[in-house]
Image (cartoon, rainbow, N blue to C red; front, side, top):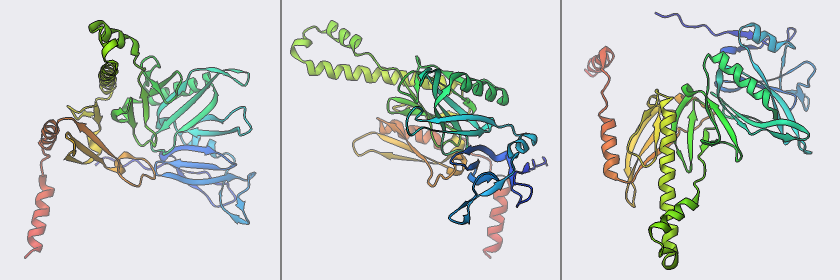
Length: 364
């Protein structure tokens, strides 16, 4: 039998008060905000604490545990290096706030970085989002030096021993309305699907997916082609022109969705395609709890995928996530459903026979 890995507990409590044992193997991020350290693990928020020079009481009652002044060094000495990140909220305004976080690089799933700009007299400033595995929120900053976040990405890649996949703004824009790029860990992707005009990546245990917005489709070439094919339309039926333009843009958009989804899925061989749907859909089938087939009242059908929320790994997730894989043809949806229902069954083995014997003995 393989030996079970023992958890790494570190006492991060002040030496002259009650010890605080933290399992650093499950640590995701530590955030310092409003004079309090919040420790987030794979189970969610697990500890709120302060150091001795910070107030630990409110209204005469103790509300926070007391940390050792060298709590971070103790964690790092035990083998868990954390990356310090700086966050800025509404920089240059009366509501400006800044805080620091200490991120476990092994938990970084994606980073989105905006185009660099001058901000309050400082050049090369960017906005960023960081998606973390097993974390309901994502880290963000709206005023960070570009070199700082780029160095963060380099260290994360070094710790993970792999290069992230990068999508630049000319192919798809992530999160921001302006130009931006995103890098992500393909091994953490759990689903690739269309989300309106976007392609969405769900990543393991994050509360926020990574959305890629494809470039806008230019109306003018479509209009010119329609008029070239039938010049009289401009005089006789402009509504038909608008309808034809809409249909062609929708067709081109779907083609772009499929192309990007195919590219991303090739980087994620652990995902399985549910084929033949109106929009591309790839998912991690190990996370699926059930699949239901149902017809729409106005034609067409869908396969409703229900996920096991425990396997999704998002802290505080109350209800399991679902996704409708839509089909214009009910017959095609039913065919795919039957194909999935006919997947090779796992051998029952001795466990199932033992259960049957147990039932037989106790039914006498």
